[in-house]
Length: 138
Image 1 (spheres, rainbow, N blue to C red):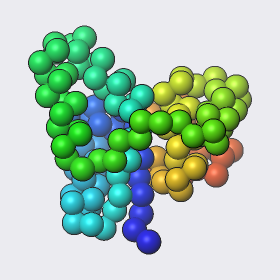
Image 2: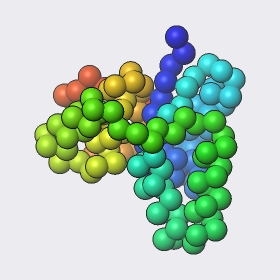
Image 3: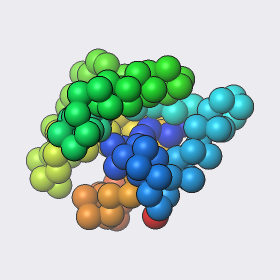
Image 4: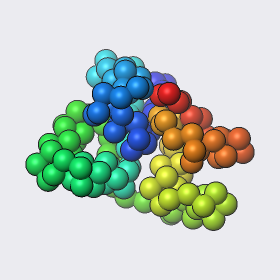
């Protein structure tokens, strides 16, 4: 079975801004195109990127980024199963993380995907206690 990765907003922002760690995300996208990995992203996390781009760069660039993500082959998850719903609620309650982060982690748990992120501040406490695999881009 090929490995699956779920993309955090910060990883995709690093990719689009060509920041440190962008090469890791680019490599996973290449793996996906080669058929050796699967990339997932929850639409709520994509919304986090969209509003950052919209605020900092305007609607046209936010729309262009959104279309690029949709067209590149990343599987966008736009529903919330009952299991993900309950797990996200538990994670918010236990770790006081954002809704987007809780959905990312709950979806990772449900799908067995590794979380591709650079957000140590939010996820180090979770990494120490949960059965979720993290791949840090920096």
